[in-house]
Image (cartoon, rainbow, N blue to C red; front, side, top):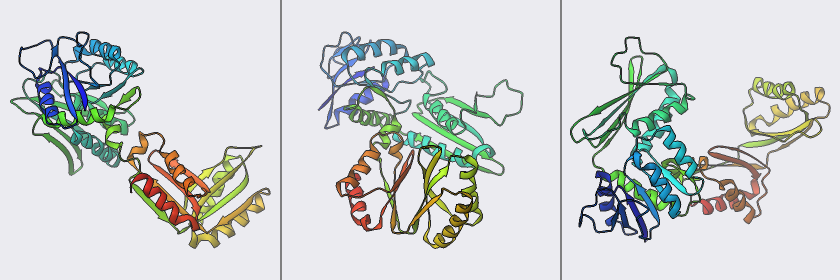
Length: 406
């Protein structure tokens, strides 16, 4: 059973969290922290501060106020307890303090604990990647009339996510009252509405010429944020000191989600290429002019002014590639060539690779266990592609599937 301390337990979200935790089979509220301590108002001891809290616990969950951040961080550090911060409205100085404290304990921070909102953030980034400068972007957020910060932390979370795509090139415009100039292309509008009992609504509008794309999330109750916070509790329990977010948590189980296998390629290896950008560029220019598609390019570090390079081509292009390489050897006297067609290309892919360490080690370890030799490998943030002997395809695929539960 995981024992949590709810920081801000008497607040609106604090009460929802404690009620949600009471229904969880693996989590219990050990204590609460709140300046408002009504006698008999809770089924657990409530203290005015973390310093006063003597109840053993495993994790602290904060749904209080950004004003309480300094004492919260100090108290969590003293107790050496993982901390989940679900409060919004933090200043840049607050964020710096959080980052500094994360050097000594695991801290999970999210402006919105809803899984749906964080999916919305991912979708917004994908939309921005496709639509680019051809669409104007506006964010509209709606909340209840008791919410103090505007714009909401979630609206800023969404704006920051979109701005990553534009390499921080967007200029945030908070409302348009008093502005007489025309909308600029770099503007990203953020608008806040406060009224009634609206739990939370966020809409992202991509407005282009003669078409509009809208992404929207609506929260029907505050319990969705409490459920997300409890998932964060389960996630952070065994983590080392550091700063964590919803993105890491969501992708934690998705280190590898897809496996691709192809026998359609041949491996071309070129040895002793002069370390000269013009020579290397010339190789791929000639391949392109010959209409030969190239994939999985890898290059060694230079030794004595020379490098080795490998890449794959489709087997149907082996003859063309072989003829082209022979012409290269006339001008590159030291060039040695090997073309192998008895190979299999395996690619493993998953969004969790971007935030998880050790994925490559697990892939290589799985293949080592079944004595598969890796001939070449390339990687990106979310993909590992490698070449193995075609005769080893079956056991290699089985080993990767077993390792990652595919």
